[in-house]
Length: 319
Image (tube, rainbow, N blue to C red; front, side, top):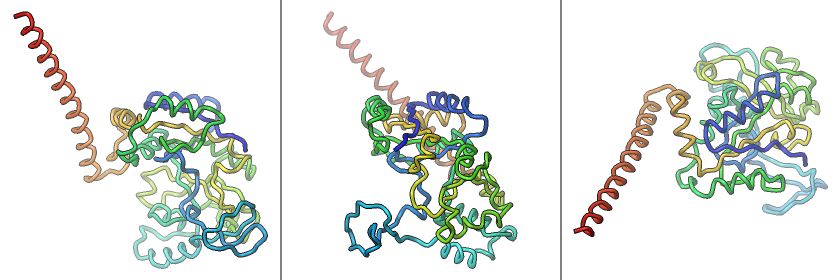
């Protein structure tokens, strides 16, 4: 299997250095996706919980049976059925009428309905925030240097579970490979042309994922980037395809660097209230900053206590 490009960072400044290096080799804008667990692949929500129901020969399998051959059939949530039900119930709450199925898909995705869409961001620091903000406190340990070195080893595990990650892609490059279009696709403006991605399992032309942008159909979508990969009939993650993998960069950050990265993001203004404006987010940010201040105060206080104790011990020895 062809490899993704591997990079590591332990601080915001190192991360931005990596991003600048990637950007220097492309002529179009990059997309970023942060994930709190580096072992997770690039799979849209509706395809994350699938169950094998036949083997490679089309024969039914028992629950829990291990299958090693390819060509198996799977079952999972039905995105088309869920989208139809969402559309039926959501109409009274719309800010404005929606004109096609893709607009409905984008809206449903932003409100938490599992779809074939996978969210990305055009902002490198926003993606880094999404990756680090969900890291559990219990994970913030381990040897970060060793984790980085092992990740960079081409023979090492690409899907480590001792860090978080930001994936970086060039959407124009992926689309050029998949559908001979060198830009992200405004899919809702040409719904008839891309209708085969609405029912991809019934259309052989909707096999590979494509990079798409959404219209600003709500204030919530407007405040975020509104860029996605739209996955077709194949259930595999974006980083499974050999033709696409070399164009993906995975930036690994060890969990040991969590606090350092969070602090660095706050220093440049990328906070929860920046991502999600509102009183709850402001309260979270105020608590976080006060926590940093208090930890620094304790370090200073106990260091002074130790110095004073050492001086007192020295004085007693002299007397």
